[in-house]
Structures are given as C-alpha cells and as structure tokens.
Image (cartoon, rainbow, N blue to C red):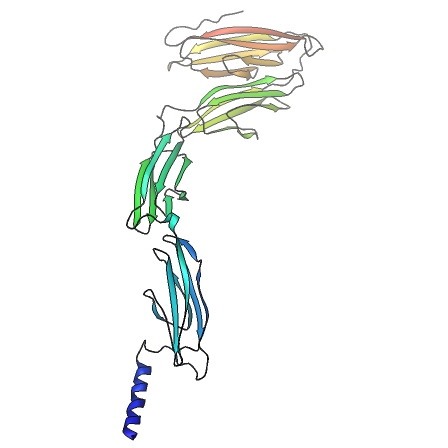
Length: 365
C-alpha cells in the first residue's frame, strides 16, 4: 500500500509539471467562474479585427476553441475571422468544466464570394481645359480602397480633382481578405504653349478721384494683383483710391508659368480748369523681333488711356505690344473743361503698329 501511494503522488506531480496540461493551480474550495468573455466590436467587415477579452477565476486550465488553445486566466486577443464565428472559452478545475461563448459577426454585405479578389471596374484620368485632371474610379468586392500620391483612403467609387505640373502616375489599390489588386493611370498636361491669357486689364478714373480696376483672364489656375489686393477671381473689378499715380500688376499663373500685365491709376490733375490736355507725342516703332514699342507724352490731362485692352496709363511712358496683324492703337487724354464733373474734354491720337518690315506712320486725328 505504501508503494502504491508513493506511485500516485509521483504521477500527480508529473502531470502538474507537464506544460499545457494545467495552467493554474486553483486554491481549494474556490468557485469556478468565467467573469467575462466578449468580442469587441461584435460586428466587423471582412478583413477587420475584433478583440476577444476574458477573465476567469478558480480554474486550473483555460482554453478557447477555433484553433486558439490554452490561454491565461485573464487576457485579450485580436481575431480576424473570414466568416461569422462563435468563440467558446472553457474553464476547468477539479469540480468540472464551465463554458461561455461570444460571437464575432462578419458583415456579409462586404464579403465577396470565397476566393474572389476585388475588381477594379474602372480607373481613369481626364484632362480639364484649365490644366487640372479628374481621377474617376469604381471598385467592387474590396474592404479598403486607396490611391497613392498623397490621396490615401477613398470610397469604393468616386472622383478627385488633381493638379500636377508634369505627367504623374496614380496607382489605385483595392484590398480584401484574398489580397490586393492594383491599377495605374497617368495624368497629362496641356501643351507648353497653353499659357494663361490676360484678355484685359485696365484702370478707369472716376469723378471722385478713385479708380476702377477691371480684368479678364482665361486659362489660369490662380490670378492675383499686387499693391495689397492679393488673390482675385479670373474676371472682376476692384475700386481703388490712390493719392498718387500707382502701377498695379496682375499675375496669371498655370502649370506652364506666369504672365503679367500692368496698368497705372491716375489722380485728378492740378492743372487749371479749362486748359486742354495736349498729346505732344504718340508713336509706334517696329522692333527687330516683330513687336512694336508704343511711346507717348501727354500734358495737362486728368486721365490718359490707350485702347486695345491696355487701359489707363501714366502721362508719359512706353509699352511693347505684339499684335498678330497691323493694329490701330488710340490714345485718349481727358481734362476738366469746367467745374462740373460731367464737363470733360477729350483729345485723341492714333497710331498703327505694323508687323514684319516697314515704317510706322502715325495717324493724327
């Protein structure tokens, strides 16, 4: 009998020492309780993750099915089942075994058929007239969709406006539990000759001494005017008030670069009322590169302007113009004939700017 008792104790000690057979030696008399066992979140999309959490007291061993196996009496674990799964925790001591279950539900709406990869139905880039591009895409069967070049996660179908200075490759990635598929498109840019066009930029002197700037720009991504005005719309007007003649420069920019045009505001003349303005010079000289230089000199004027979208200019100045065909430019100078703001006099003079070789003969009116 003594030998049999010694053999029993030896076998019991061996079982306690074998890893995985008993994880915890519960105190005698402690009840076996599964305090908590949960899945959070309980519902996930395919490819998502849920956290199993548990707390057990009074057990000698604790295990979870579905391939997880032996675990500590308290802990947590991330799971990512492909389909909705019921997880069961089993806690055992000398009194027996207790169990508890938690369900992780996989959202079937996002779950493509088993083994089916995501499908990129379409991914394209369309060039706009302003040099920007619109990316468009449509994806099915994916849990996540993303586009590189800094765009990141996107919806399964959508559009995105992009602006690139050079042709750029964008790659779309669509992922589900089977893996990831890719598709790339390249944006294009307009030809190098497609610069912004300043259709017009002018300054008109008002009777109260203020001036109205007017402009019209096409093909630009951004338009701005200096002298503290800043960013403006492609077409607009702005009332300005200056104590002295002031030059305003408009800048129009797109991916090809920036073009500029300047106008000068005028102030009411201090010359005697009734004294006519005099255009002492207005001429056009043909340059060797095919452009022409307009030159003018005016005295006694409240306002001086040139047509062909040039607008208000200073009383004395020059300007290079580049007409595609011989073009008549007319300079207008106004002065106050009387005390009334409506009693205004005007003198004009015109010149023709030619193209190619030949002399430019002023037209005097």
